[in-house]
Length: 288
Image (tube, rainbow, N blue to C red):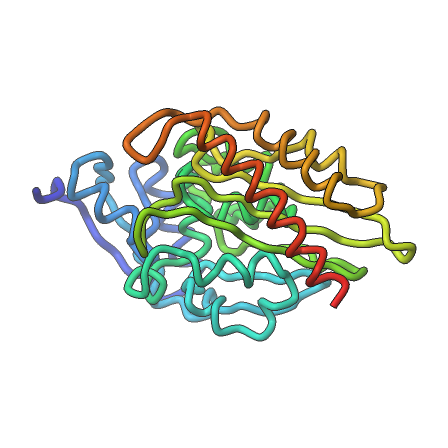
């Protein structure tokens, strides 16, 4: 199937792209990697009348440490994160990057595009929830920083205003000993997650858990923070029993659907197991 007709422009500056989006409003869509947008257009699930291609704006292609955060620009590909030494500053980010789809998509798709897409079966927003990331949104009238919990509104819905685009996603770099992990169950390489769990731990000087992050993939109508499980962990001494309790709380926060990949109760059990394993792996990284 072919997409409906659309207008196309490819500005070579960020200012030019923002000016185009300001003029187009709801009719304009940003094209970066195109790994989600183009298939949706071909299936006529999306029909923007104008595409603003940002691939010529080289200043948006970076993965770097900046002001105590790991910042990923709008043109950074998934594989840029895989190959970045700076990305190792966030254990959960570096753990997740090789799990994104398949090599073809990782070479072309962008992290920021995936975050903006808000697909509940996408991996990155669960990772960003666990890492407590912020999204940098810019328009011709200025920029603002949006916490990831506020950025994710619902199923395929974010909080961007007309004329805004995501220019970066920034993950705070923990100040103490920390570790993270992303665990993903998929039917085959490159498939969407049947269940995914992102975990991050930061330890205090006395070995207790100063901060915890748990994000769930494909088990709710949107990527979900397991807040109750995080609360159980904070301030406690790590143990297998504590991690099992957090796993049960994370499973209770999920509401998966029975489908060809498995029944709902089985998926909840996978959430519990992956949470427990992910926390154990994050702890091992933090203490190594």
